[in-house]
Length: 146
Image 1 (cartoon, rainbow, N blue to C red):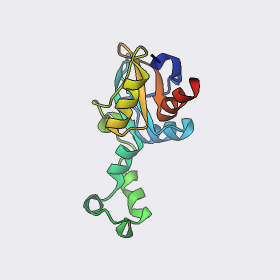
Image 2: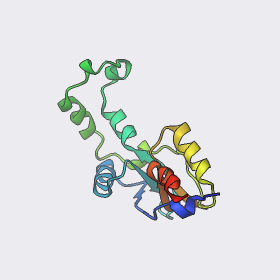
Image 3: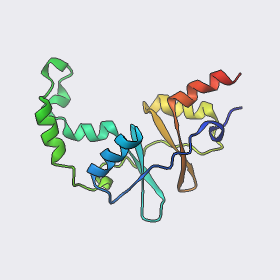
Image 4: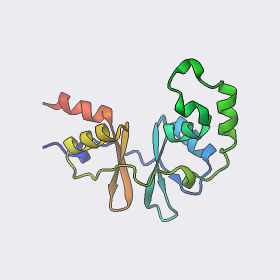
């Protein structure tokens, strides 16, 4: 059985719960991450923020009920909404129920969580500490190791 610790990448990029959203976005952009773990002042995992949770705040309310992209909001309106939260603290957008795995979990379990929760990446935790990340590509790479 393949385990998460064999495939996880040891990227310890995270943001503090008191970081502002501007820093969260910059960190995600710099490290090419679609999700970033959020930690407290003790370095303990709290949850994650992903791109969609940030975008969700920027999309106007009327757009959330319309699924036709021909009615998509103007980018200026989206950026205006986004500017209004750039100085808010990260804790405001943290998903405290974001799924995670431990290094000893099976890759099958990680694949199941990624699929069921429709996320691209999972933090890997030992106790309350982030020790790495696992993404969909690591799940796919298991098939190369036969």
